[in-house]
Image (cartoon, rainbow, N blue to C red):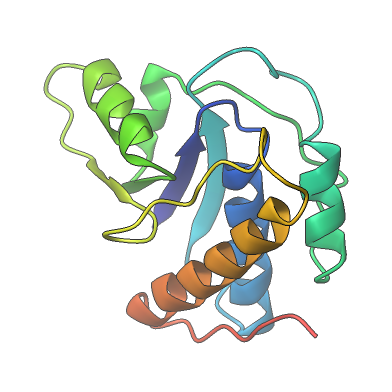
Length: 153
């Protein structure tokens, strides 16, 4: 299964979701069952590392974003993904607008009925809030997939 996480710029939330899910799946021995990736709706950060605050928030919890580079979603991502998980409702709406004709890939909010607020312009603790939500969402997702993840120590 291939799961794609999407936010506005692939700079804060979606890279964190990608690395957290990948790491928790690996720790649970299910890394080969699912492939995780991420992309942004905008091209502003293409080729950049994730936001330094995201890198720090991930590192503080044992997740490494060192090799990560931002990228923009393309039509091929819709065809290659089994599930696209957006970080907020605006992302879902933009994904639906960009969906290629005839594509039936499921597009949902990562947290089901809640959004992961974008911490980019907020207070410093917004990245901790983001990580708490992403770790909880990742554990729930992995459980749904039959891969039991556990939080980083």
